[in-house]
Length: 462
Image 1 (spheres, rainbow, N blue to C red):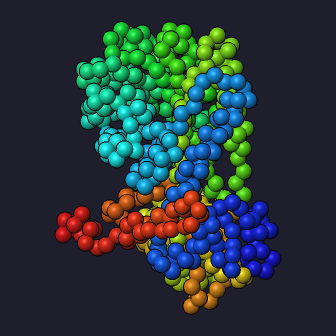
Image 2 (image 1 turned 60 degrees about the vertical axis):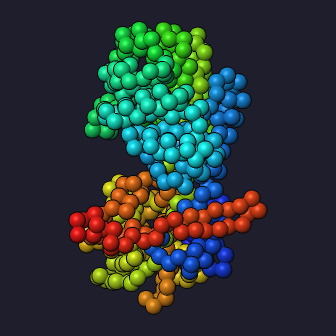
Image 3 (image 1 turned 90 degrees about the vertical axis):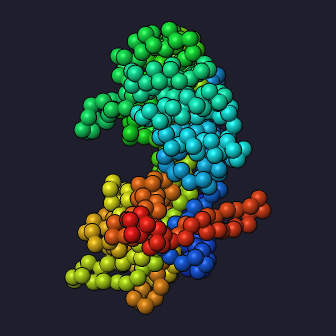
C-alpha cells in the first residue's frame, strides 16, 4: 500500500453507497465535497436531507417484509425521536416522509404547534410524550388533548402522573405506561430510573386508569439504553416486556400497541455490519410467538428511531491548519474547530465517527493525531472504531488538506449547546443544507453562518 486510497480500498469494501472518490476527491452521497468547501469554507456542518427519508423508508420496508413473512396482523408506525435533532429542516423532512413524533420536553410541544400551523402535522398524527414531566409539560399535553389532537399519548413515567391529565383534560384521552427495564449487567444501576416498575404496572391500571371516565390505556412502552442488539440481554428484556403486555391486555382489551423505542444503530465505521432485516424479523417473530402463547391479539408496533433517522445525514468538515511534531513519533494535525464543542460525543462518550480525507487521496499516508482548538487536553481524536490509529494523507504543511467526520447528524448540536457559549468561546460552525430534486440535481443553501462574537457577548452580559 502506497497511497491513502490504497489503504482505504484494501482495508474496507470501498467505494460504498455513501462514499466514493473521483478525481482524487471524496464524494458524500454523490455530493462533491470540495465544491461545498470552495463555496462555503470550513469549518462547516452539512446535512444531506434526502438521507433522512431514505432511512425512514428502509425501516418501513424491514417491518413490512417481516409482517408479510410471519403473517403479522398488527400495524407499524414510525415515530421520530425529536431529541436527536430538533432543527426545523430535519422535522420537515421527516414529516414529509410520513413519520409521527415522540417528544421528551415541554419545549417540544410548541414545535408541534408550529408544524401544525405549517400544515406538516395534523391533529391525527401520533404524538408520543415521553419523559419525567414537569408541570408545564403536562399543561401543554392537556392543551393538545383539549384542542382536539386525537392521538396525543402521554407515556406515564411514574405512579402519580395520571392525576395531571385527569384534572386538566376536558376530553377523553389515551395514555401509555413506560415499563422500567433492567439495565445491562455491567451498568451501575440494576433498574432504569425511567418508567414504572413491572410489579406496579397492573396496579396502576386497576387503581387509576381503569376507574377513570376519560383515560384509556392504549400503549405499553419499552426501551433499553444499549439499543436493538442481537444479545441475550436484549431478547430477555423484550420477552419480559411482552409477557407484561399480555398480562395487561387480558385486563384491558383497549390496549393494542407496544412502543419498542429506538435503538437502530448507524454506521460509525466503514467496516460496519448490521443485519437490520434479521433483527426486525426476530423482533416480530418473538412478539407474535409470545402473544400466541398467551392467547392475545398481537399489538400494533411503534418505534422511535432518532439517531437512525438523522445521524447518517450529517457530516462535519474541517481544514488542517497546521502540522506539529511534538516528539519523535507524535504528529498532530490541528483542525480549525473543536471536538469538545462541535462533536461532543467524541469527548464525552469516546464515540467514533467515520473519519476520512476529503482531498489528496493519491498521496502517501501516515499515522496522525487530530487536535482541536481548545486548551483542553481531551480535545483530540486518535483512533477509529476499527483501529487504534488514525491515518491521513501525508502532505506538505503548505498543501491544503481537508478532512470529514461523517454520520454526525444526531445529538451533536444539542449536546454542544448550539448557538450558546462554548468552551474557549469556540464558535458554532456554519451549517449547510444539501437537497436533491427528483431529477437528481444537487443544490445547497446556507442555513446558518458561523456564530459571531456579538451573539456570545450578548449572552455573557456585555
